[in-house]
Length: 336
Image (cartoon, rainbow, N blue to C red; front, side, top):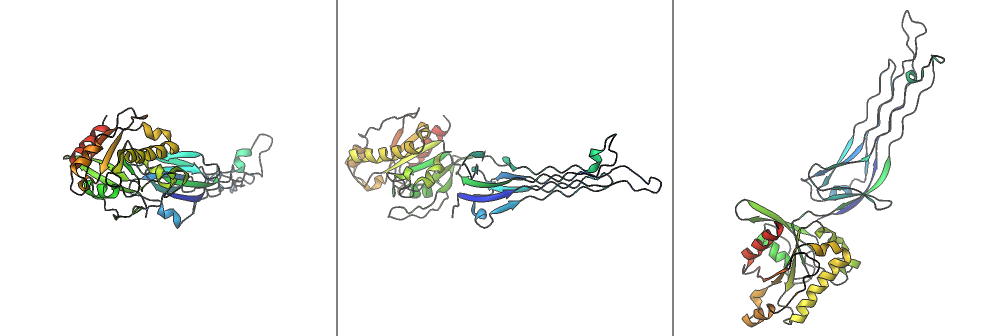
């Protein structure tokens, strides 16, 4: 199961307390102050790891703490710094402040990191307070408390191509044919209940990643159907492929309306999505007559806000018709 959001509490380590101590040697009965400083508290750090694909671990552990710094010691010995806590998250994770929703970091590449809570500074020992007029200070500082925050984690899948369509448009069947992904496929709406990623092998040594997004319906941006939960997963894609079921209604006016529903939902969620290069594919053409296929060619779609005119083509995931051509066109769009 894809878990793409979580809320956790993090706490960095407290700084160690400074030490009050004086030299006590055989021939130095009244030695000066030698209390050491406290150690620094550990930090809490988020780090992107490409071996992870979900936030499911955060369902079972909600609190993460770094180690406190140890207290200072006599003999001018500084306390040991607390150990950092490194929290591994999938690539594509957003780190947000749960209180105000502010985005603190966006960890996209493997190894990207973010210091979310800095450890407290250790307190100064009494050796730091010695002056010409106060040569035997009996004061030391407590360590500074570490930071405590509520963090919201949000995962946005990283894919090159996003498959967008109304329920039962053939997205899952297509991704199962062009990649090794094995999503659930059935002849009823909302079969896909979570995004699926598939790696498409292209030519000999090339590849790209396709995301199968659960079917959108009119009003999805307000939460209808599977709603806004999955729209976020196409934000990082470079190319959008709109899939329209060619068999449902054989009238070109209604085919155009299906496309406009999808475009309106994307625009209502984020207008920048419409600036991406796009393709329009009529699916399931194996169920059409030659005359019906000719009618599809007469449908004209507006260019919209995309800088690249939408490529329109007919495909059949069942027979494989035009799938090699589809991959060629996607590859060209990805490298424009």
